[in-house]
Image (cartoon, rainbow, N blue to C red; front, side, top):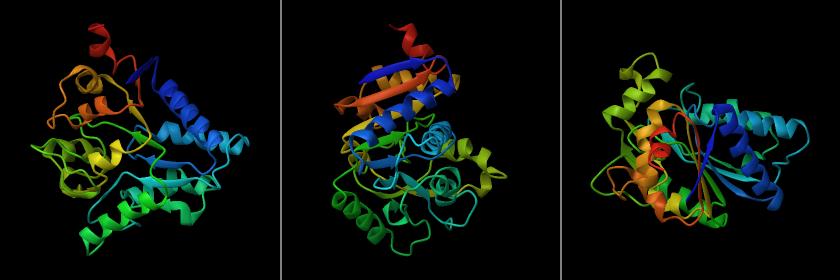
Length: 245
């Protein structure tokens, strides 16, 4: 596990975008696992800038998104489908057939999850997975539990996650109570993983992720078992980790 501490959010975005750029340059048909939420927005903006400058070509890249709210249509402004198209996809030359997003209004959860897993395997597996981290240590929407489902599945969101995500909605009551997410096993099969975190409120969970015991109560701690993880954090998020070095 490699930990990179940078000055601020802009530097997190720049460093992560450079790693993604290197991946695509080294393998034009790279399979990327993409995260949503506020944390990776800066990364996507940097990738768009590189594309517009002619430094990146996404024409052979394949993408799989980490998760999607269950019950939100692709057209819903808070769906991750809507988010990805507006924040990234429509600004670069990714081919539509190479973009894979979970269907939040599927009538057959089991079928949707299996098809998603099959598509990942058919694509050769994820080369580089981008992750954010929740205040409670969730990665994707894999919430703290007594056990962790290993593959893409439907999950009940915790009250803490619903509360944290309510900032994107008018109120907490509007936040979906469930989501479909890649499982821990799916994430851990990625060849490389980048985890991003910024701000003081992430300091405790970052420290536990890096130094704490591996526990299902903090799902991100399982990343300690992966052989190629880079954690990029700003000084505020690294505060507790750095204080113990």
